[in-house]
Length: 139
Image 1 (spheres, rainbow, N blue to C red):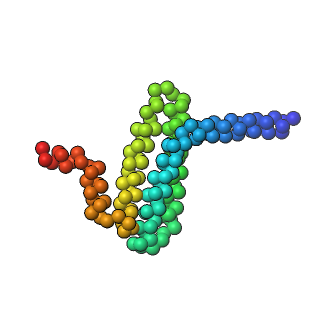
Image 2: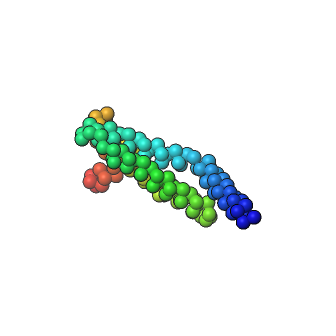
Image 3: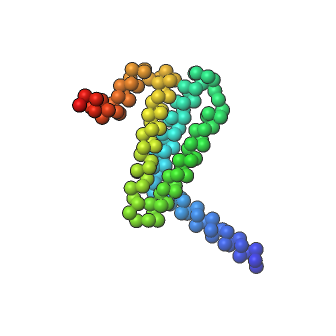
C-alpha cells in the first residue's frame, strides 16, 4: 500500500512537471530557438577560429554546451517568473536581447578571426552598431 502511494505520487509529480515544462517550451519555442541558435553560431565560429589559431581544444568546445545550458536555464527561470507574476511580461526581452546581441557580435568577430569575413567588413559592421559614438564625437 505504501509503495503504490509513493509510486502514484511520484508519477503524478513527474507528469505535472513534464507537462508544465513542455507547455512552457512550446509557448516560447522561438525564444529558446533564438538562444540555441546564437550560442551555436558563436560556438561554431569560435571553434573554427580557435582551430586555425591554436588547434582544437576540447574544453573550449565544451564551453559552448555549458554556455547553452546556463542560458536555457536562465530563460526558463525568466519565463517562469513572467508566467507567475503579472506585469513582468517584459523581463525575457530585457534580459535576453542584450545577450543575443553580444553573442551575434562575438560570432561576427569569431568569423573574422576564422578568415570568413574580411576585417574591413567587420569593422564597417561594428561601426554601424556604434553609430551613436561617431555622432557624439562630431558634436
